[in-house]
Length: 215
Image 1 (cartoon, rainbow, N blue to C red):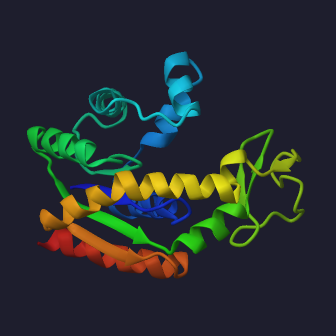
Image 2 (spheres, helix red, strand yellow):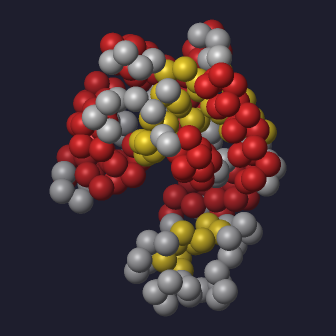
């Protein structure tokens, strides 16, 4: 059972992906985190990420396959988070999964208005020492300026400022909305309102997943 989860920045898709992975025994394939780890040792990837350039489609899928070979040798029971980001990546992933004998059977989309994305991400604070992320609205620290884990200073990252968020949203709509349209054509799309509390959203996703299992 291979699943894709999509949603704009701040939609909570990472949180929901982790909850679904725990509930249904899925491997959480977080491609963004994988690439961030690669930037520590791969200057070319680091330069691409820092400049907002997408890693070439087939190259990115190759990295994902290598990662899965280490962590999930069956290529099954995966929830893909952060990939695919474009229609061409979607086609590549769909054909790759089909070739492995474990097709993508559902594409989940968390939908939130643009103004909510800006509100949520603008409230995000990151510890400059340990990297823990807080949100002044949904997950505030005891002290607005200090990390509760390590005592490090909490900062607002450059990409969490409103003007940067709007640019990232424009890219999301340009690149990822076609993925949603393709999944709809394939009859495997399920859209969920991402404005509600985490548990309520998860209950909806849980029902969708149970329906897929019982199909």
